[in-house]
Amino acid sequence: MRILIIDGHPDPAPERYARALVSAYAEGAREAGHEIERIGIAELAIPPLAAAADWENGTPSKAAQRVQAAIAAADHLVIIYPLWLGNMPALLKAFFEQVFRPGFAITTGERTLRPGLLKNKSARVIVTMGMPALVYRVYFRAHTLRSLKRNILNFAGISPVRDTVIGSVEGMGDKGRKKWLDRLRRMGHRGR
Image (tube, rainbow, N blue to C red; front, side, top):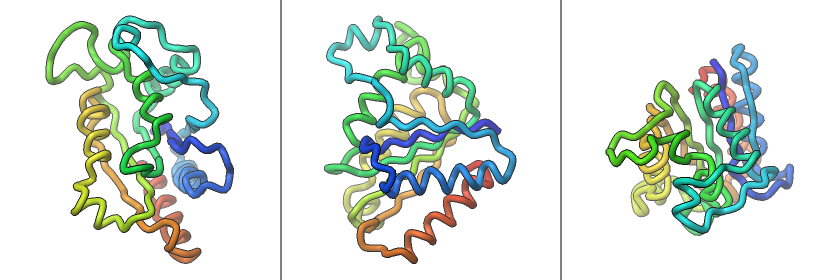
């Protein structure tokens, strides 16, 4: 299986926990014989969109085109990002706006509830956060995660989309962090 791992943390610092999670998933997947490609949004030069006309008719940047090619070649996407101010980081949102354009992720011009062009791909979304995962899922109803799954990934035809929420990251300690790294290695091994 060809797996594309998208590191959605906008800070390129190597000590970010997201980097360790990406590496753990990739290690497990490689051990199982999966083909892995990694993309870090912090290293990409993808500007945010300023007009709907650009999204509908503009030409994606070279960096966005490279990401589109990697997504097209993948069977499974893994997206890892931190929850910032209750949402995905702005740079990750800009990434999706530039990459998931009409003609690539959805049909051009046609208005339909099922416009997706990225069928036969699955995804796993992994979100880290400071609050407890249960609070995010129950009280906040995982609103940003649900939006990403329904309004971007499923809308583009990607299904199934599974999710993992890792809460209380700052307070979990080394033992808790290691437990999650081991869990992600196993997920990578299974390609899920």
